[in-house]
Amino acid sequence: MLQHFRSTKIICGVDEAGRGCIAGPVVAAAVILPKNFKHNFLNDSKQLTEKQRNELRPIIEENAISYGIGIIDNHTIDEVNILQATYLAMHQAIDKLNQKIDLLIIDGNRFKPYKNIAHETIIKGDGKYIEIAAASVLAKTYRDELMEKLSLEFPIYNWQKNKGYPTIEHRKAVKEFGSCIHHRQTFQLLKPEQLSLF
Image (tube, rainbow, N blue to C red):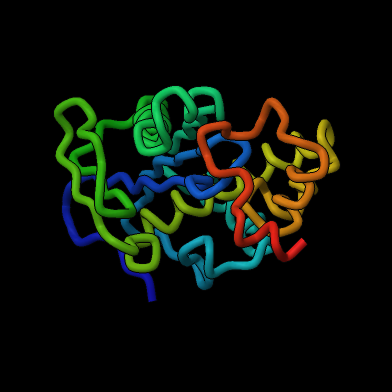
């Protein structure tokens, strides 16, 4: 069962989606929730169905004290590397908040300090604290929506299903048709051991 991060301070949960993809942007969300907010099935977005995530998104948006979304495209990812791009997306999301923050709680084990705001990194935090889980759901749903739109432009990669992750099907399409303007060229788009499966 998820819990609120115990503090009397104003807490902001931060998480990202899309770090492990070979196409599309990395997306981050920052969310400040009321201390009494709860929901029966809110959890780490990876533990939820797509239907549950899409159902939760408007509930989180309507109930949040404030939330922000940061989007860093694949070209910037190629320029600065995925870790730095993730920090940029997180900072961009925090920039969009209209509420003062006392403490940022970040899913994972690394973060680049944001201005002079205290932060704490929490491994698997999206499965522990409701603030990070809410950010996880927003980051995932916003990114999935973007990939579904890009899929209309490049249907051969089936992004509406794989969302840019390196599935065998996705890599098979890259092998057959080549990469496109939305692929991360600094990532290993094709793996030799997977090519033997085709």
